Image (cartoon, rainbow, N blue to C red; front, side):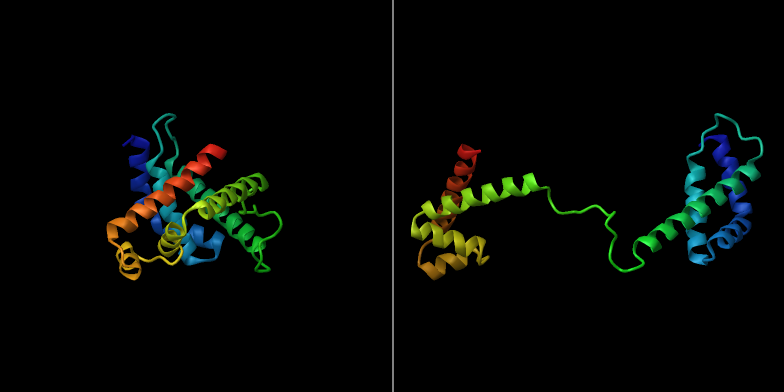
Amino acid sequence: MPTNAVALTHLLLAERSSLLRLSERILRDRPKAEDVTQSLWLRVQRIEDDPPIANKRAYLFRLATNLAVDRAKADRRHGELFAEGMPSENVADDRPLADKMLLDREALDLVQSAVKELSPRCRKILHMRRVEGLAPGEIASRLGISRQMVTRYIAQAMTHCLDRLDTDA
C-alpha cells in the first residue's frame, strides 16, 4: 500500500468522529454520513504516492467534504426525479427499439408457421412441454408412449423450428 494511503488511513481512524460530524452537518442524516465516511475510507485506499500529499489532514477533510456534497446533490436529484412518484420524461425508456421489435415479431411469425407445419402429435407434445410445462415423463404417461419417444418428438420439433429460423434469416 502506498505511504500516502497508509498515512491517510491512520489519520482517518484518528479523525473519524470529526469526519463523521462534518458529513452529518452537510447531509443532515447520520446513516448517510456514515456511508460517506465509509466511502472515504475506500477512496483513501486507492490514493497513490505521486504526487506526495503535503497536508494530509486538510486533504482528508476536503475529500470528506467533496464526498458529502456529492452525496447531497445525488440525493436532491433523486428526490426531484421521483418527487411525483412517476419518472420524468428524461428517464430512458427500457422498451426495445422498434427495429428489434420488428425483427422479433418476424422471428415469432416464422416459429408459429414452423409449428403449424409439425405433425399434430409432434405439435401436441411440444405444446404440452413448452406451454403447459409438463415433464417428459408426465407427457409420456398421458399419451401412452415412452419417455424416450417424447424426447425425440421435442427434439424433432425444436430442430424443425430452428431450421426454419436459420433458412429464413
